[in-house]
Image 1 (cartoon, rainbow, N blue to C red):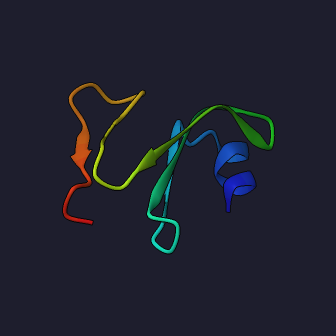
Image 2 (cartoon, rainbow, N blue to C red):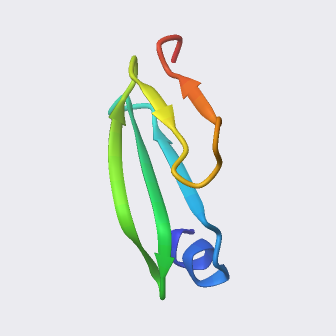
Length: 61
């Protein structure tokens, strides 16, 4: 899916890995991938890099 979203120019992509208890946050699509990435541990807040004011508190996950 990552390649499809990046190629389509989706500005930001999040994947929740419930088993590992992390969220993979990717932004800045470049070809078939994303130039920027970060991993957020459940319990921390994930803040959008492309949409001002959008954030999710993951403490309840």
